[in-house]
Each structure stands twice: as C-alpha cells, then as structure tokens.
Image 1 (spheres, rainbow, N blue to C red):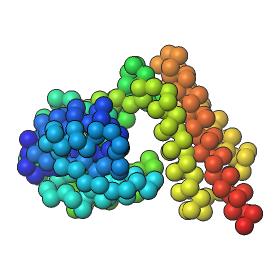
Image 2 (image 1 turned 45 degrees about the vertical axis):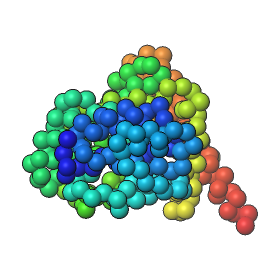
Image 3 (image 1 turned 60 degrees about the vertical axis):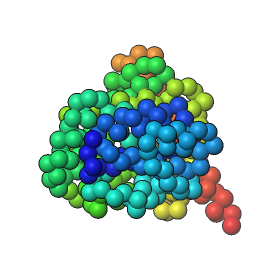
Image 4 (image 1 turned 90 degrees about the vertical axis):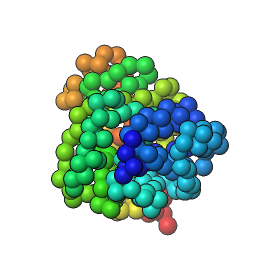
Length: 253
C-alpha cells in the first residue's frame, strides 16, 4: 500500500460490491474514501468494517459534483478513482504502486474490460476502453453531470494492466441506469442551450446503432453484441426525446 495515495469510490446501495472494491483498493493505497449519496442498505456499514472512510453528499444528479466533492476530503498528493463494480488486476496494482512512488507530474489512464450479463465484451458498446483515473490531487477537476470526464493538463500516460468492470448483472439494473442517465443528460443539455428536432433525434439514434454494431464491430460479440447495439439506439433516441420534451414544455411557458 502507499501512504501518498487515496482511492475514491462513489456509492449508493452497493452492498454487493463494496467489500470487494475496498479490499482491492487497499492493496495499493492506505486510504480508501467512500463518497456515499444516501445508501439505504449495508453499504456504509460494510465499507467502514473493511477499513474505508465514509463521507456523505446528497445526490443531485451530478456525477462530477460527487467526484469534485471527494477532492475536498483527500489528504494525499495522489488520488485514484474506482467505481464500486471495478477491480484492478495484479499488473495494474503493481503499475500504480510504481508510478506513485516515482511521483512524477503525470496523469494515468487505465485499460478497462467490461463483463455484462455474464459475458465479456470485446467490441461495440462495451468494448475495452481507456479511462483516466490516477491524478495529482490538486491538478484535476471533473466536468459534465453524466458521462463525466476529468480536466487535467498533466501529461497523460497509459499504465500496464487493466480494470475488470463487472457492469450490468440484470436488465432491471440496466433499465434503472438507462432512465437515470438519459434524464440527467437531457436536463443538462437543455440547461446548456442544446436543442433538437424529432428528425435529428432519430438520426442520432440510427447513427449510434451503425457506429456500435458495424463501425465498432459490436456484432462480433454475438447475439448480446447485437442486443447492446440495439440498446444503444434506444438510449440515444430516448435522451434526445427527453430533451425535445423539455423544449416543448419550455416553449409553452
């Protein structure tokens, strides 16, 4: 473990994941900080029992706000962000330890592999991607309410190893996130002045399907790859339809 690194995890009702993610994080950091947004299950209890420190911030549909709030409570020079359903493999753990000890002014990106509905995905919507997660604490700031991203001017490097991302385990979970994320996106886009027509909404959705199924080869993941590409069509369509609904309500005022 490293006394100069804090691992941050955002949670709400993650009792199935929390013990495992805390134990994984403790392999590389002395401090694990949980930012909980009002769990009603045993998330907080289990986090504390496994040695994590828990702080609370009320959920206001803003993922970046949660991540930025965490920075106010990080006391170390380095911060690493994990989601509750992510685990660092042994090679990545070794890489993290090494660069934190070297203490160079850089930010680091991790490869992430997704497992959903019991299947590992290699293409399309859930193909392996690279996510910036390790930063000098004072040099990072997060933006966007959903699909948030870090703003950091430090040189970006990729570390060896990868994150195992155990995402959707069931369709109800997928539907809950579908509704949550499309609503947040639409509200944020409307507030920023973005506007859309019904035709453009459908066009964005069709392009999203083609991009995931064909250009990113989602069909090579078999039947589930095609299903996830179709889901991406409906996800894209719905977020623009919700934006269109906000527009029409606004026009009537």
